[in-house]
Image (cartoon, rainbow, N blue to C red; front, top):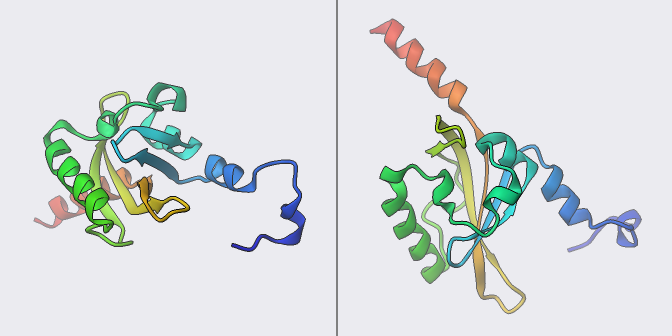
Length: 143
């Protein structure tokens, strides 16, 4: 990957700065499903500070009723090297730290190390709860 010349010798890690400061949630979980990256966007969406979740299971943001399906899909993706949704955005349910339910638009990807082995899974997303609440209200008004 090429970097613009002005960033090649910078005193800071450009990629780390991009992840940390991105407005969207960026979450990386290792092959076992332990959270290893949790940026400010994830803090804003889910309510947990990075220190509260790093090293813990993704279960912290997955509703209990969806965990079995999540982990089946997670394991299948790690084992096969392919995600079911292949770059498409998926709207799913999640849970905020305060217990409130969220709708989150997420895209998923697998991250490979230098040797090509899968290191874990990446999710990038944003809270879309307000959009779903408004849509439900509109549907109720038309019924």
